[in-house]
Image (tube, rainbow, N blue to C red; front, side, top):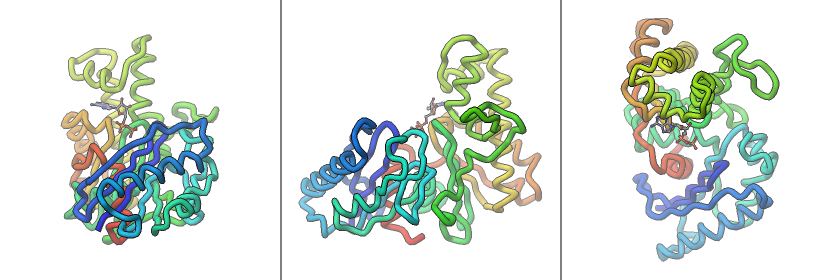
Length: 303
Ligand code: ADP
């Protein structure tokens, strides 16, 4: 009872075989080569799947299916990646159709944050929740919605693309338009950019958090502001969807307690109703291999 997980990203494509209990049995990865035609890149992915199966003494038809996590915006109805910013050469490419030609197995594709949401329900921090939101704060911000025991994917698989919630009336510029998107204010990329501008030298988001922890007078107010923006997004999601839990993952969540306590306080002060104010806010359980386990969850779990 083994599924194939394929996690497509702008820098690498992770490929793994994942058991029914979420254990990664074998894995490998390829550097995403944007100079290659996507079909050719997927040809290499198929070769890796065959190799991994072979090494485990498994024939392809002994595998349960293929789950694909991919960056949005995508269209799960057509099986295409619509316009993910970090995979420009893949725009509108029929990923599912091509994979089906290469590997004769059932295939399911979802937005990567949606897949990671299902993984947190399956073997992560939301196993006990029937209503929760997963948020990943990393290079960008993504989210997934799980309500009434079901993954909410929307009409084209783009539900939960919370990085594009507008949390500021003007906000930083995206694509030459003042947008105020959540991820332009509070993602790892956005934190590094704002901190670097304030200091007049390049620093990473991790370095910005470290400076704030040391009480740096320039960076501390920025990090406070970032926590407020993260809280604002959470409050909007809580008011809209009434989850019992919010699970936060992604590189930035590794800051840990300072971030979680600030977000909990903001939510406690701003959410609509007493139950919303008490929404449980916890770190994601899955870190390494979260993308792969998410992709495999699409095969192993009903949703
Ligand atoms: P990806 O976006 O490729 O999935 P990650 O989830 O690791 O990758 O997120 C990367 C972002 O998280 C970067 O902006 C990085 O600076 C930031 N980040 C990674 N680790 C930490 C940390 N310990 N503290 C703060 N920010 C971090």
